[in-house]
Amino acid sequence: MLSEFDDAFDVSQGIYRLSGTSSMEDLEQLAANADCAILASTREEILGGRTKAAIAAHDSLLFALGILVARLGARHCFVLADSIDAKTFLPAERFGVRIEYVSGAAHERTNRFDKACSAIRRRLVSSCKAKHANHATLRCKTINDRLELSARAASLPSTPEDIRAFLFGVESNDLICMGAWSLHKRCEDINVLQFNAKEHADLAVIKAWRMRQVQAAKIPRPSQAALAKDIKVEPGLKFVLAAPVVVGPTIWGVVDFDTTTASGAKILASPSALTVVLKLAEQIAQIVEARS
Image 1 (cartoon, rainbow, N blue to C red):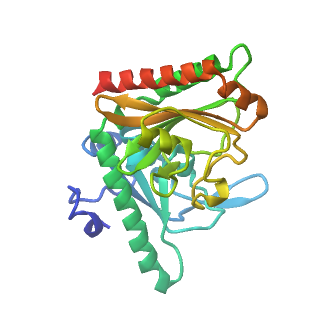
Image 2: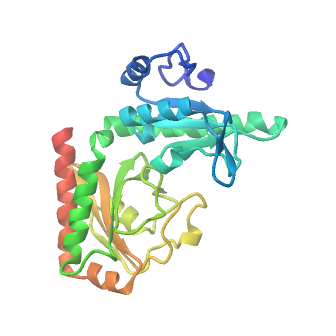
């Protein structure tokens, strides 16, 4: 694994092994001196439940992953897992940590390992660029507070049951979801949802970025069926209202409201919703400038 990355990154010459004898202070020190981390997960434990047992990653790996995510952020942490078994308990994806699987027959493992490392390499390059662009300096609570307040403001005098709010950051030729808020459970994952400017050129968020102006779409394009299979987007969206986050001469990202209901579409088509989304974009731009 080291040989896959040492030509492009400053890789530690040692491997931190979770042997049970290393102290928590050592792990925290490692996290303090790193920008990104890759953990290798093996099927080491059996978790017992009331009615069934499940294969799981070792507790020490999950413990280390928690510290690294807290220090480096989910987009800067990666896991190489040797099992694609659906029963394997590895909750990293719930927190936006990218997992690459390398399991399979002997003749398949090398090819899958190469593909996994290539995918991580691309994400590492993207993450490093994001860090220099100050994407990583935004705290999740700050983002969510702004998104929630704006969604509630756009929905007045009703409760924001129909409105969802998202923040996307520009990374190279992609938009990456950095924050989201809604009253109900959503299928989109923060730090995982990603749109490419060429592949998804018809999306309102991409148009807002490229055209540097607010975009409103009654029927977002492309449809979910046309999106890449690994992109999870809420089906049945009826309306999207997106505005670019302008920092200096560049577009830093995009904020948007969307809805799956007719009542939500009526709200987002109103002048008041347009005012709120523009104000949200302005507030995010001010936060970015203050932290840069």
